[in-house]
Image 1 (tube, chains in turn blue, green):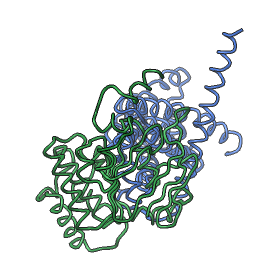
Image 2: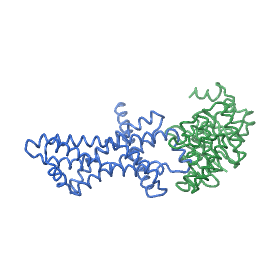
Image 3: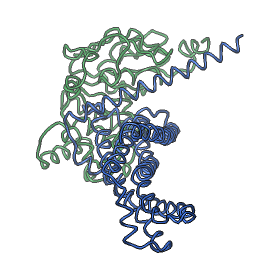
Image 4: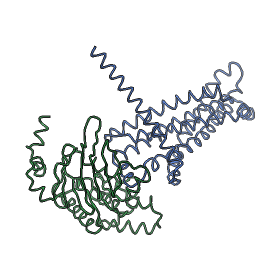
Length: 263
Length: 252
């Protein structure tokens, strides 16, 4: 009986911790929204962060997008050649990259690379009293630290996604034209013919949501880091895991929503 | 004047401040002493509004800062300068950007005027030619001095010192004590320092308050505290291993 009681207590504690976490994230996000429209606006900080997040992610985004595009073309060729429909490889690669893989892969790369760095930086500031020092100097930490990263992530992720789409399509083109001998004109035509404005729009909507997810999770985890270096390590791990899970969950929900309502 | 009335703060089930009351007069240096982990830093953070109490008031110049938020709270904070235990310098900024942080954030001044003020503050704490260094390139004592320069840069009316001599050698510790005295005499500020370093406390304090079990159990001039008959205060100020503080802990 005592054992059952303890199990229920443990379950209750976990449920309470979860509710507390969701509550904390909600309040944190509402504070970000408040400071987005209230001065001071820190354009220089946004540019600096965008450079850190966007420009420095270009090589890894290029590499992964290029190879993904190539693999996608090769894998689809395996099936398409059987039904002699190789020219549809171009459409498949373009649609997959723009609607799904471009936004998701870019978001996962940015969450792993920059989300972790943001959590580690803010977490270190938290455990070394730098966040308290900001408050003591009459500066709101969300306005100073989080809002510039929010804008930088939003701008960088959307730009990187467009770039990733382009590089992925180029990867597919290289395989399609150079290896599978699809004529250049046919490949380009089959890439752009099936694409509609809503395909581009839906991909970018996803990037917009993923940028918010990465920023809120990374900054929130950093802000609640405690207990020195170990705490910062835990916060960073938790930030990456939670961002990854939320990106995939949001992707699924958004895709379903767009499928049923967005066509 | 700073009035702290019935201040209570719990972290989970741990009671840190328990109906604490203390009045700090304008222009005086009050040192709060107590064992490590007794809540001295928590008290300082309530005074500057970083922590919110579970109950009680902190009244600064007639305003209860526990009720203030946003711009109003920041207006009160502009009256403060705070030296943190670990200096809390911003790693990503250079020394001059750290010292000038408040000016850059809140005043629309020319860069040359800001740089002049930064140099003035750095020279007040005995540092010159380090403006372009990063905090990581400085020694512990230098970091503390830069932290102090940052604390005084906006010409505060109240300066809070969190363990000003912790983590520096005794000579540097005494130099920091002298700096605090000098700043007090030159700038006529109200100072509140928390420390468990009695040498420092005797040297800089006009009044010493001892924090124990979440309450101020003794308040007096350095001489009164030194000559106290209270066994708890005596054990702490004379640094004795045996006594009512440690006996209570053993029973607990």
